[in-house]
Image (tube, rainbow, N blue to C red):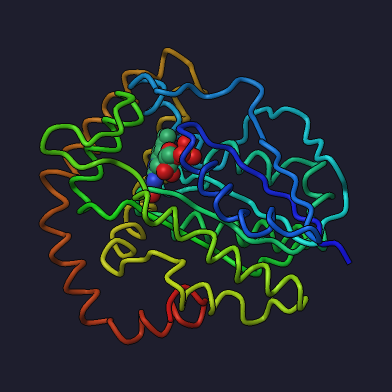
Length: 303
Ligand SMILES: Cc1cc2nc3c(=O)[nH]c(=O)nc-3n(C[C@H](O)[C@H](O)[C@H](O)COP(=O)(O)O)c2cc1C
C-alpha cells in the first residue's frame, strides 16, 4: 500500500527547507511513496533579513507562546501515514509561526492520531522548545515518534555573532575570520540517510525503535553545557518577556526602548557575564554527568 507523507515547513533563509527536501529524498525516489510539501505561513510574514528592531521585538511573544494570525491551514489531503513538522527555535522557544500552527484549530483536529517526526535546523539551543512542541503534539492526540536536530557547530560565543550577521545582516558567511553560520552543508547531506530510517519504520509500520536509531545515526546534536545554560536562560527570559509585554504588544512603538534595553542586556550577558557562569555550568555538567546522561537517554535524545 502507498505511504502518504506530509512535510510541513516554515523557513526564512531556505536552510530548513533544504533540510526537509533532503530528508524526503529517499521517499521521492520510491513509487510507493507520495510526498506533499506544505509551507505554513503567518498572515503577515516575518522579514528576512530581519531589521534589528523586528528581530528583538519577536522576543516576548516567542518566549510567552503568544500566537500570530496564520494563513488558513489547508493541506492537500487529510489522511497521511506520517507528518514531518520542520520548525525553527526563537528565543529558546518554538518560533511564533510553529507555535501558532500548533495552536490553530484546523491543525489541531488534523494532527489528531497522526504519527509525527520533527525536524530542527537551529543555532544550538533547542531543548526547551522541543519539550513544549512535544507536549503540545501529545495534547492534540498526535504520536511524536522521532526528532532530528542539526545545529551550528561553531563555539557558542562565535555562533551568537555569526547568526546575527546572517539573520540581520543577510550574510551567512564565511565573513572574514568568522565561519559560515548555520548547519554545515555536509550535515545537511546526511539527511537522506535519516530519511531512509524513517522510510523503513514507515514500511514496517513500527516506530518504537525509530528515535534510538536516529540518535545512533547522529541525528540529534546536543550539548550538556548548552542545555544547562539554556535551562537557566529560559527562566530569566520569562521574566523579561512578561515585563516587556506589560509595556506594549508586538510592534507597539512604546515598548521599543524596553526591547533595546533587553538587546543590550542580552549582549552584555552573553559576552561579558555568561562566560563566568559558563565555567560553572560546565562544572555542573561534569558533576551531574551521569544523571544528566541518564535523563537524556530516557527521553531518547542521547544514545
Ligand atoms: C528571532 C530568532 C530567534 C532565534 N533564537 C534561537 C534560539 O534561541 N536557539 C537556536 O538554536 N536558534 C535560534 N534561532 C535560529 C533559528 O532557529 C534558525 O536556525 C534560523 O532562523 C534559520 O532558520 P530557517 O533556515 O528556517 O530560516 C533564532 C532565529 C530567529 C529568527
